[in-house]
Image (cartoon, rainbow, N blue to C red; front, side, top):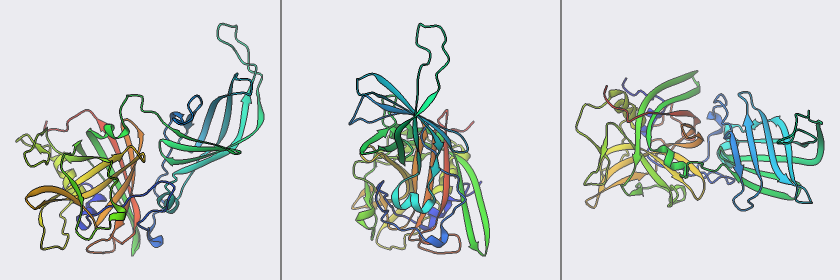
Length: 362
């Protein structure tokens, strides 16, 4: 069970952060020679979307396992009567280089059709009169699993998936998760795949988060982001600001999963008191982004802090639903480069599924 998450165990060599602004170039460049093209695509959230700046219209999105998509746009005609438009086309997932450098996870383009002469409420069944091709073409660009920008001619919308539970998407992070991670190493001297899994509890973080020694401020976590840390057992308040757990026998499945995520970190510095590393999850409502970093637990000037940078295995996380998260990771500035940890290697995948919790000893 040691190092149960082998893929993210490589965090043992990094402590840092990257921040991809969707629609902008990432500050930390991937290494083109080590981009993994075999990771499964990231699909859009299936459900309802609306534009908070242009309320009154919206999208319904469904995507099949092979990428066949069915999208309806509910709108109005020039006379103010309701009108429905339909586009059926393949969802085109981005390759990893495009996703990382632009933030775009995939696109869809196709003509809008308009169905007419169907059944009305309270009326006898009437077969639809079919669908006619409209003069409009839909261009949809997903900049997040729950955000899509649609362009039709000169018109533009920025649709987001509303949180129907009255929460922020980051609130879903709190709780217990089963985590599966995969890494693919290509060309060293052979191709290899590592897959492993484990369980963790996530709780809100109350410890200050700072940039580590030598970290570039340009790649910091957004200041408005909420942060969460992984623990085992039942969390209780801590006088030093770090989540602690009730003294008890931890579930080794959870405890060793955390060990696999953070590993044994050596930041190569002698003037900082290192007291451990924790996986730091975060969500920023302003940019609609979610991520995962390795944070170094330090005592600085007598206070406890969590430091990020300059070394890390950073993950972009994508919320597919209240109980499902996907992630993609990149190696950042490894302290001990080796054939499995190359600077800029973009090859890691993580899948998280929420389960009843907390994860505890049975």
